[in-house]
Amino acid sequence: MMGKMPLDPISCYRNFTFIPMHHDYNDLISVFNQTFISTFNTELLLGGDEPIYLPADEEFARHRIIFARGFYASALHEVAHWCIAGPQRRLLEDYGYWYQPDGRDETTQMEFEKVEIKPQAVEWILSASCGFRFQVSCDNLNGNFEPDRPVFTAKVRKQVLAYLEGDMPERAKSYSDALRTFYNLPPLTAANFDA
Image (cartoon, rainbow, N blue to C red; front, top):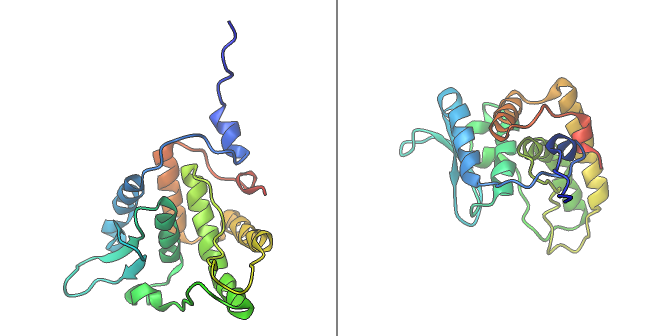
């Protein structure tokens, strides 16, 4: 009797067809906190409707990356911003970053995408490190301008490849390595990010 062919997890991973696996945000929290609490006094926490980064203060001894509503992708995205923020930015609420909410016009959307290339490149690397499907976020559902998702994806991918060539932020690399170890995935290569 012929059975189904078993999936080769490595070839599925290399071809960016992700292996069915359970993705629980609690695992992201656990791996992050084991990796960074002692070295960066920063913890990843589940939050409510809106994500936010809050530096340590009189009430809380640790810096906090708070992601939205238990969404796995939200946790990865918020950690990506933290991986890029320098030491002075990590002392500011939401790193002192500019953010224009959904509903942007074309000019504002282009500015948004320009500042999101690096964080979304890190997010894509972290997603691949978990075997989790990544899609760029143009984050403009109510705007009067339709973003060009394929063009933005190509820009993010170009940054991913630059990071893989050795320009990756140190904390992004540490978290990527820890996630790949947790999920038992091989080192990332450019082939993991073929369009």
